[in-house]
Image (tube, rainbow, N blue to C red; front, side, top):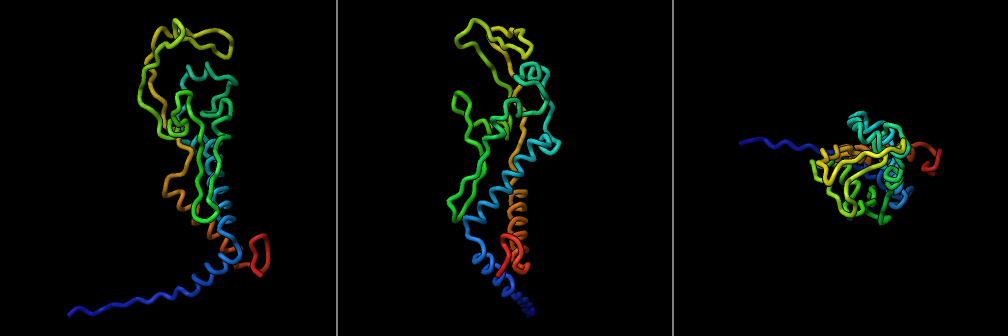
Length: 187
């Protein structure tokens, strides 16, 4: 007959910390701090070119940039500035962008996951053309085979997001453990 092995874990200390956290920080505050941490991660992704993993811009893209420079996803800054947090103040926090392409597709989804090759066809003009930042024109013809847009993720993966949330909560708990110091200090 197999022997039973019983492991008892005392959770009182953890429960006490959680109760202190709940008293010291309203859920809305906690979710707002977590949201700010996730937006900070997004900002860092833009600043570091996807933490060094984004592919460089294509030569044609560089020619067509309005303001020059070679930072991906940052020609106008509109996409980078579109990331916001949303919370119900009690149970969840979301970070994302709601910018869409002229035909209604999610710009964030396109850049986060990339696209495969696709065809661009003339709609209203006689030929496809684009003006470079130097003022001259590139003429492409009636259609062009676009090679696709590479993935340039800015959001954390699920695992990284969970780690960031845990680190944020642990930092807030650590501040509560400190005697009456700082914004989240105990009483």
